[in-house]
Image (cartoon, rainbow, N blue to C red):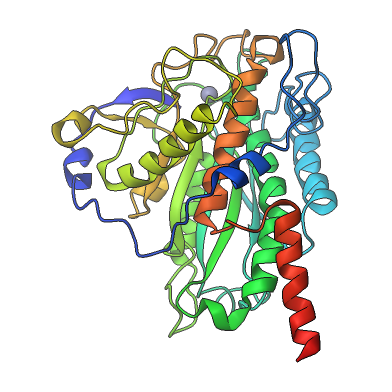
Length: 396
Ligand SMILES: [Zn+2]
């Protein structure tokens, strides 16, 4: 991505702050505790290995921490890791969809380089999305969580740990962390209980974000440009709630450059400041509960109080742009300034701050759980709630 960029586009974005009419249910303190299903807090940060995010051994992160230039074997290995993870650790109702495209790049001449976005999607069980569009899926509004998995072409051997191996690993973590509660909620509430509300979740593991030679409109965002265009052109059946998969994105949350200590995440867009505030609130509450490991000088999301003219500051060019240009609501979770290792050989596993990553895992899991109304469906209480409902049905 490209650092801060000022544009008159911001004037257009400076419109209403009214959030969409989807329900958003804060989690109880009890559930927030329940969500901390990470291993106990370490006494020293040097003497433990996180099972998911340890740079050398973590099952989610370590398989991504090597060069992933599109069209190379390292890139294919990461694709395999994502698909294997989804099939072995997520509910079978998750759909895996590859969106494939090719393009030439200024570094590779006439050769067509393959770019492959992976979409992991889970819709309510009664939705029609088991059929492909135009027939299926047009009634579900999807919380869309995105990160890019390709790595820079040069310097050779560049790993891209914060850029964006860690954000990808975080998204896998979140999918797994909310999966069971989502199953329970949908079993419990059933089709009748959700007349006005059809919410799904999808994870976009995007390809080709990086420029191959120098950042420009043509040399960057290969995967996201192709996907936004394809989704704009895909129509659902007449009478669907949404006309296209693009319109069905309730919020596009893009994670990038996360994994270094002391991130400062600005609120970039007035239109989605309400969503920023929800994430910030989750962070505040978790900190208050003593549930986060890091003790930063200020919160990761410290701009909840921002308003009005303070927003005229520009934004970072990144995978959200092709979606934003088509009217999608964006929450961009990227630090400004960028981590000091950005686009250097030091952006590797050794320079990551694992406690910050674990805190991001907690914050994002809680935010997604609130968005998907999962209060009451975590842990034993959640299991009991669904079981007792089943036995009630039997007695009837
Ligand atoms: Zn980059």
